[in-house]
Length: 335
Image (tube, rainbow, N blue to C red; front, side):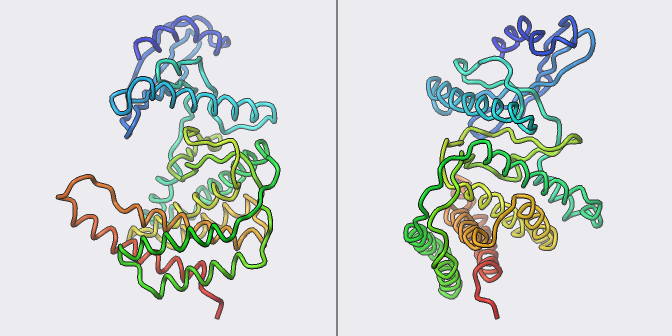
């Protein structure tokens, strides 16, 4: 951070020429994550201040060279997406500031806002909060953002391997059976999935895939939304996978007893409508969403402590019931 601050003192004015003379660069806080820190940086000019975010990978977790490699990969992804959005006149991607990948860091303009997941949880806890339209608008903007991102990075359609998808679902179901998922739920999931993919599309839209498109990484502010997590982005993949992961994360919030099913359903519908899912895609999207939910269940609650066995058992019990309900809603045959 000392190096980043020192470099910003000499380069910040070129990124914000309208703000006049540089006065100071300050670190005003930080948030620890599993493999990195997020530092809040304020750059003071004679005409005002600008907020930056510095993501610094922890060398202590994976080694200095690996931290540099992760920072370089994410930095390249971010610059590519920002450039594409800028050419199209789109917003929602933070502007990169400088190049600090050799120090295991990425610095961007900070988009001030609140994670979409926090807004959903607030809507669940506070009666009437979700009725003001803000949550529906945020979900709609999120759907538009993902559709724009995929249009900007679109590639040739790729073959849809339904057999491979079914084999993966069967493996996941067996893994979840060890955690308590019953045979009836498994039959519902696999039977519904086979029906959904049978005679379906031979190809699926392809684009860059974020692989971490979740409500925690969607930041909602007064001027719209922003996505600031590009570490796991791949240049090509099935476009529906990001939408499926997002929907699965929204639905998984129902494992909390206070989270209202009506709210999560509305968020999913607003997102799907804005994203523009066709009729034939919707059935496949439901299968991909179930795959994501089963993956969450199969991974279990990783606490890393034997003393947390009771919490793991409670988590598995809650998730088992939730997966069974999700299977009935998504893949059960119509009455």
